[in-house]
Image 1 (cartoon, helix red, strand yellow):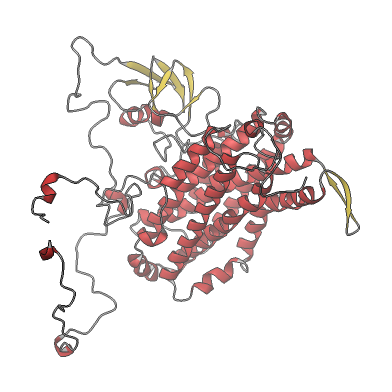
Image 2: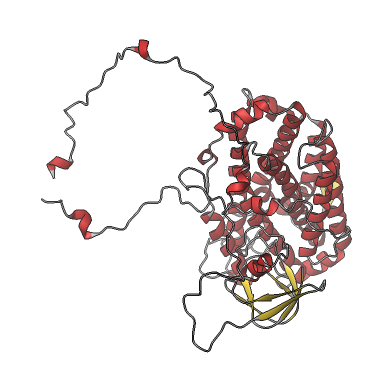
Length: 376
Length: 152
């Protein structure tokens, strides 16, 4: 089946599965098969923010005063966040849009990915503020072996799926010979790769990001790099929504209500899911070792961060209906909750960027008394 | 009306060549005012409700005679027991009684506070957006409808 940007077949829009049904034609939101995606779009739109709203002037000074090993922690963490959002700003679009079959899900994917591009822009905003030459930081993302290693595991499921789905879109199902290579395109394998891609996306959003948030907030907990923490709060708010979207997609697949074959695929992938979560947790612990190689910081070290990795991994995997993979423990970073909550900074909204404060809102209430001295 | 409009032909007084000699030299790095207290973390500014959600100081706006708010017991699977009466959500009630619950959004979309409902029934103030497996509840946006038992 080849992709078409406006499907002219006649079909019942609301009988389509999430993926691999008819390509979407009319972008209509009057009725939804899965109302949750419409709700997520509305919520994400209400969250709109821009990095420039957050003033980072004090962060520059804070950064210059940080000891070398803390600069290493801050910059490495920022590079990692930049990598994750670079991937998420494009991959959901590239991987999922060609095979999506529901208008509300298609728009959710676009809205989701777009908000990741705002996150990427905010990293540039932060980097510009802390170093004179942003290229020093950005160029290292593709050179630093620790970051490259992580980039591979973040992107491999996406890339595997995109490779096969490209063949599917061009050649359809069947065994094909392309450039002398035999390629077996079958729906079962496509669905398996898609399911595992979604699991790896969920791991990225729900575990990897949160580990990096913990580092950002650990600085702010000591009254350092607070502008950065405000940006991360806004990013964390978006990510909480994205991970909910991904959990819904995974669970709708696993329940099989909209495509019974997906339930079967999900059931056969349970071991792979556990392996993906366990691998990510292991990598996050290794990353913690790299971050704190030259020394810890007050409030956060390799051991505490590793405990947080285990805690958050358990939380996220049980949300998908799996048993926790680590010994259960309480949150080793209890202060992170109030940092993650984005609406609780009690400062004048025009001075600090309280996230519920509407930019460009106008007071539209006009009293007759306002026109008292008005004559024609 | 005309008085409200600014006459565009009339220039504001504006001196281009101000005497720069009296101006202090421009400093890029502003001097920090001396202060004897340590910089407070931003966290200190966080808004947290001052009154206990389960022991409100002010009486509720409406109190019907002979109709006290019902009290429901909230049992935790680890043996702790608290009660729910006044709070706006189960999460607030638990926090007010020193039960730590993981949270983020507090409005139903992140799913961080997800808990298992072992016995009883809850009512949702707002429809939760987070995915809930069978038997799970979101304490941030529900209140008990009966005596309940939960597992965090």
